[in-house]
Length: 282
Image (cartoon, rainbow, N blue to C red; front, side):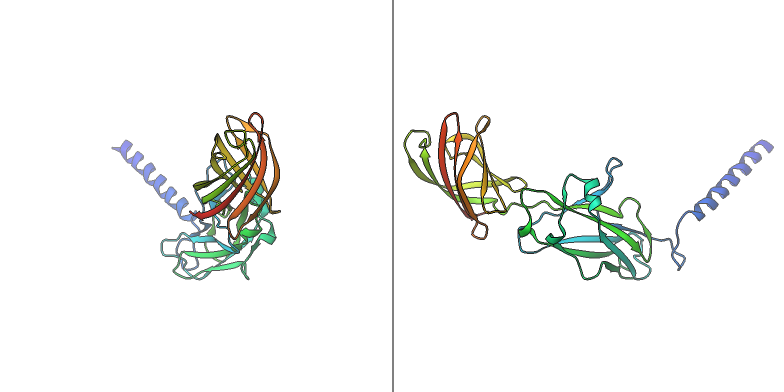
């Protein structure tokens, strides 16, 4: 009996000690309740990544809103108005992704870098306005965002900073009517030739790149178009393998969603083709 009493006493002492330790660990708000966690709303982070990521697909417009959501994780919401200070940090992008940090000229920040989570609420939004029409669509951009300080709660260790990637839906993605003019090669023949096709699909194939199936609607493979900031285009022709390409002339109208490009390629002998794309829908 003494043996069992000894074990019981030791167990009780251990439980009491553990309870005492646990009571000392949590952080408490002034009202006596446990402090909530203040964090950015981001995707789950693995131990192998220095920062969590959130992705917002951007439409090519004059201005596009990127919301930075700040959370307070307490069960009852913030016990008082909690002011959270936000900052942009390009070093986060460099350390946490392969994207380029978005140049400061390409976005506008709110008038204040402080957002308030109202008493009893769990979220606040810091709204960044980006300018997609200034983007170089051949590049991938991101914003590095971090919580600098908070007047309440405990700032999260894992989700106080993150990479906000900004993939751009190509404005050239859609359905087109296309006029093809072969100057050399005549499509599958040897004569100069012109013809029209409807319902040609262009799909996003990468940053600033759209792709059409086939080459001039004659050769197997695909054709990729890159619309550059200077108003010209690059073309990649793949038919069994990449073909050497030279641009003769090119231009586009982003607002009208039309473009014309004249180029030569070798498959295996030289062909010269001019294509005029006119967008008709999604």
